[in-house]
Image (cartoon, rainbow, N blue to C red):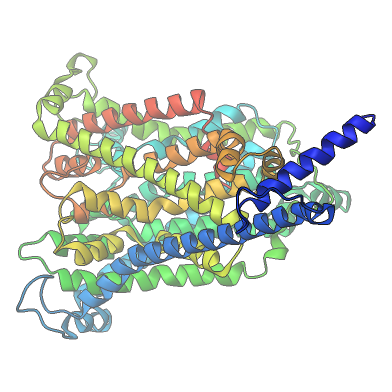
Length: 622
């Protein structure tokens, strides 16, 4: 720009006009026009900067107040059920009973019963003996499958990666139905085939046994270990493995001495998660174990809340015991991963992902993975679909007997429409609430660090380590005398509290990958923080929001551990209806309901993945 005398005069007049406007707000009379000295006019930018600094400080104070408000609300919502279950364990009667007093009766029955043959002795022993081997086996299986589809040149990896996640779309009762149809000692299809081929009168398989229960749970939980480790394997640097290979280490040594130790944090996280799920799992051992008097703590808690008269103090006391068991797993995880630097897989120097060339062995690995998929996922699903089309249970298959009668009975039932509506409302509401709240909380936590935000992050993650049945009992004690009791509201609140951590972790992990320079550039261009968030961050986060929404939706659609404690006559959900049909002996209708639920969830899954960019695998690492 060329400065002339005319330009300088215009600039000088503009500065005078601005200074005159500033001075007009002072106590000087409006009729008196006075010139502002150039020294005072030159100080105007400094004043503007001071004003901006003041606004920034005010904004920080507002954000801090909002954070503390969030922390207070989350703390109350999370701590209330936990405090309520401890309170209930020391009461003599159900909440709201005026005759209730404080007593150690329930605590003594639960904890002393561990040693004197009380009702908790066998239930606790069965729970531990089931949870530990299931955790080890499911984690190992999921880890093997994650390694196979990410670190090898096995053919068909893309299809296997999708197939191994299919069980995330349905409830554990699908596996119960499928394996009952296949391995029932009296009417299982596999036992019928075995008898026809060999003439044996004794069944080959018995799903109503400790081994049968563990078998169903292992294949149900293995996809969690697969999902939680597939991202880690994919981003693992192969440099160390290549150095070990040059030094003469074979594949097994490289796996044991390098790959698995580096992956230990992800493995431990998956094992802890599966251990907690195994502790709270009541549907699989509850249905299959009743045939052989194999009870678990979660199922015993359920029985005490649904018996007449109910024993809510006993359920609360048993809940504290189950909470202690899950805390042991959390403590072990913390000890195992306390030195996080040992598990660094991607460094500032960059990394080189790669695959292991297996030669002809890749076809052997393909056959093993195909066998696992058929046995663990495809066979029970096909059995459920087949049972939905058969009028009665049978050990033989006649294509001419296939019918849609079970579906007609299902859709003519009034509780089916009620359960479908309730489940959709809860899944949609919980997924939306968790996504919106998770977006706000994750932005607060990741963009600005403070003590309050660190505590908020911890409080949000706390419910995930609490077994679902225990959390349900705590919610029951906390809200039994409120308008939320036996309504969809208490179920929705329980789901949001328990599963908010999934949205916060997913969105927070994505926010940390978005450079702050984008927001700063928008601010320089004049955008407010709100506009910057709406037009910079939000478009980039759309796939992540879709993934977080989908994850919570899938979990709520199949959730039964908490809802079985909290539901009422008008708040039944599809998993609860499936459970009721099974216990009533209506296996065909239960199978038809399971297939219907899988279809609904499958449609939502396809829509969100194809049109909104949702990807559960991408969110697993967070």
